[in-house]
Length: 197
Picture (cartoon, helix red, strand yellow):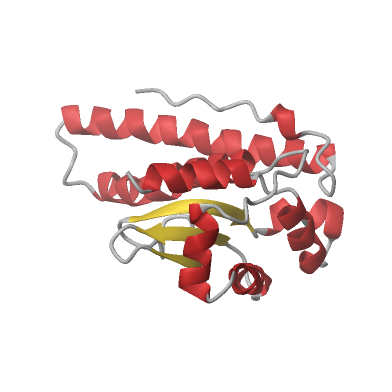
């Protein structure tokens, strides 16, 4: 299977995100797609050639999680951004779960922003745990490490420097505010409904 980079040009012109920043970010994402395809092909060839016990095979297997998750996390990130802010439905099942998980929607928001404001690079992901039926805002340091097993990502924010440095330099808090203002809650709610199936 060959993965194809998705076209996210529809979010160009989003307030708080310069077109140059987004275009640079799209190029970085396309690199993850390219590398995922290269690794998929190389690993398949090594399997056919009986090279699965080599150190090279082992290292490429380990690398695959980085490239694949980098591809998918960027897709989720770009998909939950919209030029026209889509508000969260205050009476939605998602809001109810936010209240059950954090005490209030405002507390969920504060926790998500606080997670993104931590020092370091990575991702902030609002996960839904199908077992406990609770939400968690989690800091992911690397694409391939720290994910919650069996939990579904609902809202994804990139907090690697490439996501904001061009526009915001070291003002990560300003970037986070712009991201919050651009969240497409309809997409997040759709992900939540799908996760409950």
